[in-house]
Length: 214
Image 1: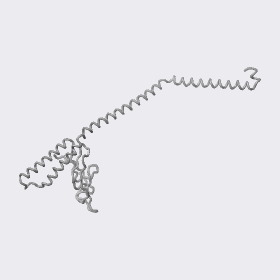
Image 2: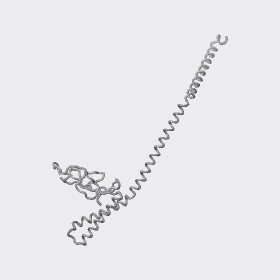
Image 3: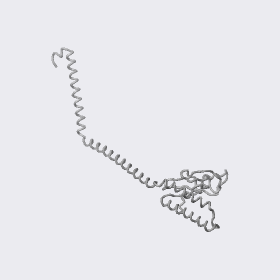
Image 4: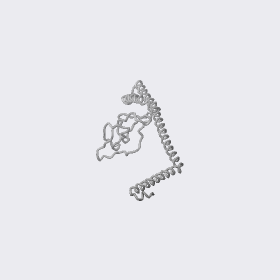
């Protein structure tokens, strides 16, 4: 420090400020150098982190592609399985009319041969129709005695019937149908509702709601 600075307080303050600024600059440069050294000293960790991120992205994209492929496959399968839905529903009316004709004919054991032949022909036609429908994945629902299932049955009325517990199908007004597990038409049924205190004669038990007769 010069003799002039020692004798002049203002000059002394300027010198001290300059020295402090220089010291701060040196410290900042040292900190930056240390940071750069840290980055340079660990390049492997940086590469590993980048690889992990890219791997995660790749796995996510692969999962999305697989999900898209599965959805597309299911859409194709559904299109094949249920392409005949409208045609199948149209056939249900044919089956209903054949069944009505047989019920209207009643017992033909004492009928004349011509009438009996006609009824036998209608019955054979109904069986052939049901068999053809079954071969194409269409099954008939005859849920008599089963517990009411809102997913397959449409309750039209309630009726007392001591043969079945409450909430069970006591009468089938119209058969239902399913196409490969998908409901085509619910069965229209009457549901048991017994008077209070009247015990049903039949206990609830498992049963099949599919009529596989042909």
